[in-house]
Length: 236
Image (cartoon, rainbow, N blue to C red; front, top):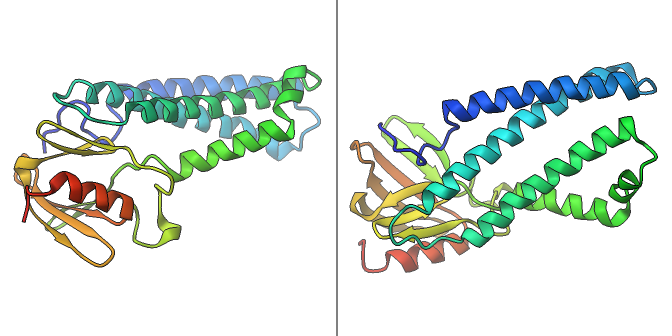
């Protein structure tokens, strides 16, 4: 299936290359900081922590680049109605958490007595950090994609169970002139065929531009109510 720029849910080759480069730089710098200031740390963690920091730099940098590209791609769609203010706050929250971890790691090794590390270690800052982790792990709402023999299955969350939700707090969803958007994924009205309401889910059936069939399953009551309102009168 040919995918236009921005709609591909995976990282682009350029994003992956940049993320790998940032990850390697992060690994080298984290190893150097550990060598200079981590002599009192258990040997296992002297090796494991730099590797974890390199992986963190890889993952977060790739995420942020991908997020930025798709954020600004959505703005180019005609008649776009999307919660961009929430998108920007979610983006900023990821940056805050990333910077917090970097500062805690490097200051803890190289400047353990600094005022900034003491500030980061206060109960208030730790609570803010943990609250931020909770938000990024349980909100935002990107579609989950499963490929099956009969086509694609998109879902707003893993299942109808409360413990399986990835969007407990909010989901990023909206519309543009030609259809609806959930996360970064577009669903044009022209490609939709019908919808089916079940007890705990709403199923939207359709075809991709290349003719591949899909079903978009919404489990979250908030998302179901939103989709039914947007699609009212458009589908049977």
